[in-house]
Length: 258
Image (cartoon, rainbow, N blue to C red; front, side, top):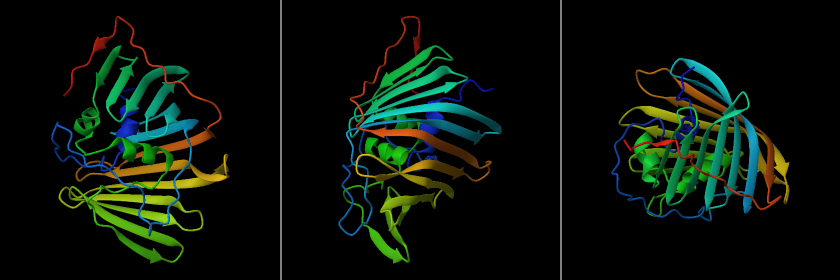
């Protein structure tokens, strides 16, 4: 098995435009996001702390494998993810709006830097809020200066906007007011990314609808399609105040940015 299966494969697949290869500047230039516009019928999760466990199935680059996944969040503050195989943790990450820290226990290396790391890693202008939204099936807000197109399509509301030349389309299931599908396409590279949310179940507090199933499908010209399936089995909101442990063993080597 490729020892580079890590968590960033999952994060990259769940990032806006992870299927694209467009260069972005290394200096942060991302404009602030905004909450859903009044005409958008999406209802995002209301929580302070989230804890979820599940399994990820990955089919990419000619390889198929699975990993157990643990996700913790403090909303708009910290995303903590641990990926393990056969009960052994391989990757741990702690991400905030201003920092990215990743330990690769398989290679005994670590990275610590700012959020531009993910932008460079996947050549997309991903933001913390967008990454958080994608992991939990929330509506992904547009940048502050993006023009929205909102259309009714029977039981679905279709919301579209452009972001740095990438077309973002979100389908909202009106009966649940939750995101059902996200389509991202880059006309220049002819790359596409589709994220489908399924297996909605009510969780407390407030019987909020949470998608326990996520299917990511990415396609680039000249490459085999890549898919990531995440099935959450346990999801808790505000059950307890969570910690986000992250420490680097002294013998680990720091990985330079690329």
